[in-house]
Image 1: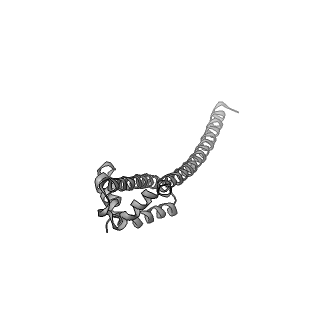
Image 2: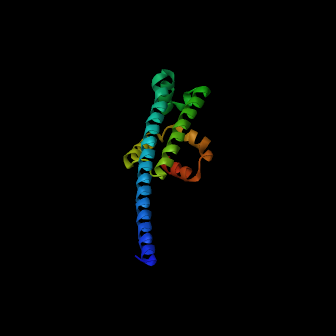
Image 3: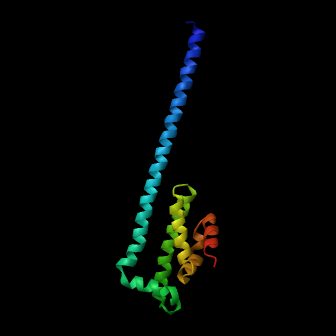
Length: 152
């Protein structure tokens, strides 16, 4: 075998090694993306539990939340603020979900469920007030998204 033939063979082997390496990297990226989706799903479950746990564990907060649906103006100032900050927690959670959705880390069914939650509570006065109080603290894409979602 001549030196030139040996060089061609080395180039062919080099190309094969590069292709195998690219396939390996692509597979690793797929696995990392899947792990990120699993982690995001776990975080979402924990965030959901954390948000609803305070309502389940604290009857007084649950009563304030229920009254906030139709009697927000009748709540005292302390309970109005409590409710506004409770709703802010939900908005922060929605922001996180929005970002995960933008990165492709939420399934379509998960995203649809979060949209359903937003639509279910968007008429709540405390949600509207909380959004108006805190909206400037969020990035523009999320502000635009929420402004659209909270339209009545």
